Length: 246
Ligand SMILES: [Mg+2]
Image 1: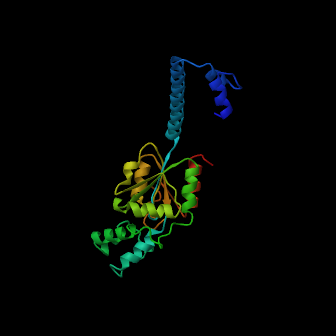
Image 2: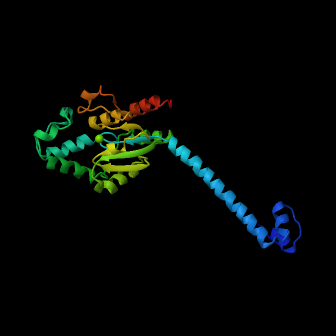
Image 3: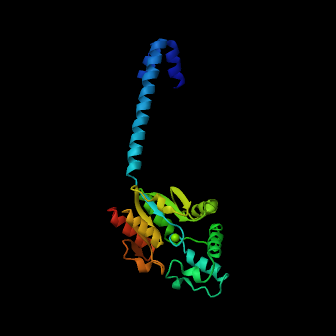
């Protein structure tokens, strides 16, 4: 309220504007209380309406569950370098045609330790995302997907993982680090992007569209109801076409 307006109100004179006319009428305490109450109720009703609209929008928003290793970055090459230090005869990723390829070359403890060593140092300068990863996630977000980055890894790597995602501009809404991401697969999920045949099959079982990058360890299962493609751009196009968003 400006100085002119305040003076008019103080004088009880009627200046321009409805607000001044009302104030100049010197309302009683009861009237003021009634005005305040009416305004307050209106405000609550407006807030409720906004919340309802927001909740309706959120209900419509579908979830995209996106993996990290061998989905957003080329984890297998770094793992191979690490595994070679345990056993020089370790075959390179071209020969990892079986999910449990490592069993003949190192112990389970050594294998898990190698993976955790990488993941606990996720935010390393050498661990770069695929060139398309940033746009892939940004476009999903643009199309109103709620993005859950879900990685099969120790929750102890949360800080490093979060730092890596943020550093490389990889957008997301939520991060899930555990040894069973399939607990996320429910009716609100629209898509699952992963390289693990087991995870992709679980998604298909739940009626969720599943896709991933093609690798030696999953290409033999390509007819199990999910789609394998060569890069994230192709996966993005597939998702948008499948979801009738293109
Ligand atoms: Mg993976």
